Image 1: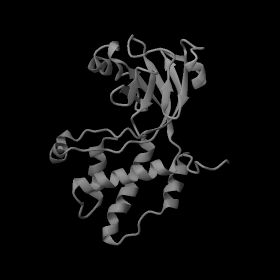
Image 2: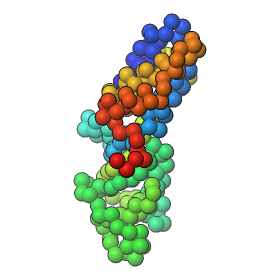
Image 3: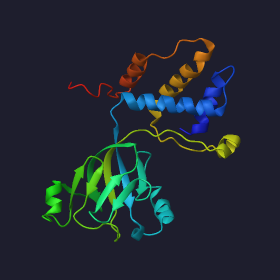
Length: 223
C-alpha cells in the first residue's frame, strides 16, 4: 500500500484528524507492535559491491525482477565491510538473523569461523556469527552478486518536512504485505481515537488478527 493512501484512509475515518506528523508516528507505533508480536519473516537482500557497476544502473536493472519481499543493499547502507578479515557486518536493525548466503545463485556452505581462519575453505563457504558473515576471500572486488537470506522486520516509514508539506510527493512504500493493511489501519485508529475517550485496541485482539492471517505470534513457544 502507498503510505499516502493509508493516511488518506485514516483521515477520512476521523472527525478531527490530527496533523500528518502524529499520523505517521501512529503508523510507526503500529508497525513496531506488529514487529514485537510476530516472528520476523524470511527475506532476501541482494548485495553488490562497487566493482559490479554503477549503483544507480544496478537498481534500475533489478527493480523489475525483485518483488516487494526483496531489498537491494550495498556495503555502505546495509553492511559494513572489513577488508582485513573479509567480514560483512549488518548495519541495519531490521536484520535480526542471517540464515544463508548465496553467490551468483549458489548457496554457500556454512562452516565454522575456525575453518575460515585456517583457510580450509578458499571459496563457496562462509561462517556466520550473529549478524556478521566471514568470507574466505576478499569480496570487495569482482562482479559476483551475493544474496543474503535473513530474518527481516518491517521498517518504519519516514517523511521529510518537504514531503509532508507536499502531499503529491508522498509516495513512500512501506513494503508490508497487503494482509497487514487493515490491522495497521485499525491499530492507528485505536491509537488516535483515545483522544476521543474510545477504548484502545487490546494486545490480544492484535494477536487474534495476526493469527487469523496465519501469522505466528507465540515466537518463544516450543509448540
